[in-house]
View 1: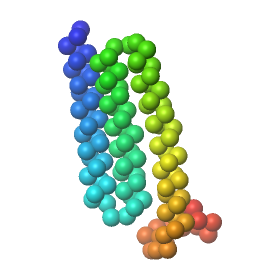
View 2: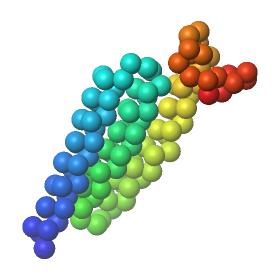
View 3: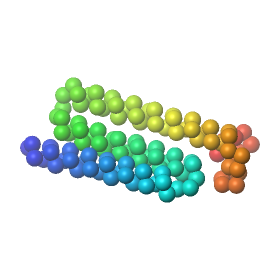
View 4: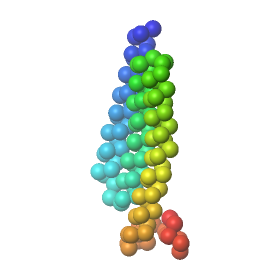
Length: 109
C-alpha cells in the first residue's frame, strides 16, 4: 500500500511541476500582457492543486492534510481575484488596448 501511495503522490507532484513549467513557457512566449496573465494564473492554480494533492497523498490523511487543503482553497480564492485586479489595471492604464481587443465604453473587456 505504501508503494501505491508513493507512486500516486509522485505522479501528481510531477504533473504539477510540468504544468507550472508549461505556464512559465506560456508567460515567456505570449506577447500580450493579458495572455501572459492567463497562462500564469491557470498554470499556477492547476500546478499548485496537483502538487498539494500529491503532498496530501504522501503525508497520509491527518491534521497536516487539512492544512494543505486550506492552502489550496486559499489559492483558488485569491488567484482569480488578484488576476482580475491586474487585468482591470491593464484596461485602465493601457492606451493601446483597443488595438489588441474590444473594450467597452465603461472600460470592461
